[in-house]
Image (tube, rainbow, N blue to C red; front, side):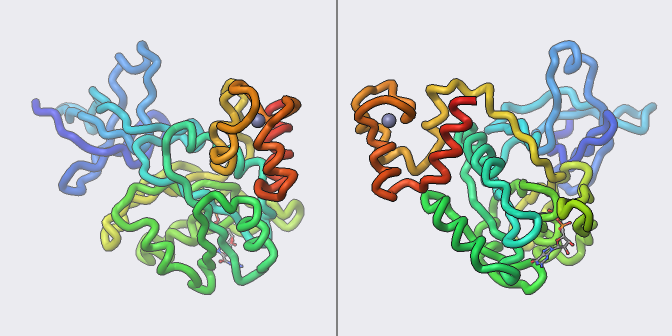
Length: 285
Ligand SMILES: Nc1nc2c(ncn2[C@@H]2O[C@H](COP(=O)(O)OP(=O)(O)O)[C@@H](O)[C@H]2O)c(=O)[nH]1
Ligand SMILES: [Mg+2]
Ligand SMILES: [Zn+2]
């Protein structure tokens, strides 16, 4: 029996779907050793597996070293985390955005903020640009096909994970990239103006004309970053970088310390006040 190499594109109910170099998808289970060693294969993992003649499914036997991984969404080996927000409904959850950026920065993953539904409201686009001036951003409309050329260029040749709240339009955007995918798209629940969860599992989709792999992920609104030591938190704010080294105390967490260059920058309007205020509430909670 020979080992075959492939990439996990989906995991459902204890089964992993692994695509090999020829593009054939194999249904696999994880070998028993993983459970014992508390290892969980992730979508995006490059694995070695064996198919067994007497069984319909194969066994994932080995996970190759990961380039990176995220907890939420739970994915491995990505080149870019695309944080999608909506210009109208659902309203931007700025704290969730902050946390997603923190998580990606800590994992050493590039980030791009993508504001979808741009045709509906110009104010949110401007607000995002103000608050996240230190981050790369694009504004698009999946419905009106606006900004999609820029989007394609951001994705080309990369393994990109789309993440964000439900109903911001992640699946809709991916459908524009490749019409043949026909991913299910959801409406907004009228009662709560929150998204319905249409995408239930994380799925890795090849977009061959862009030489890209794109993860479509279920939306979520809770992300816990409380495991990050408080003294580290500020490291993951790009706009603090320029100033953090100039604080009076090397251990400054930019809260109540005197001579804090980050706080000065906030006072001078060089760092966005809302971003800083939310940083303090993450720091002190
Ligand atoms: N106005 C507007 N609505 C959009 C746009 N893109 C997606 N939607 C709508 O937003 C809702 C959620 O889309 P969906 O792709 O399922 O979001 P997901 O949960 O992030 O995957 C659907 O009703 C879409 O039709 C857009 O560019 N403009
Ligand atoms: Mg979806
Ligand atoms: Zn400081």
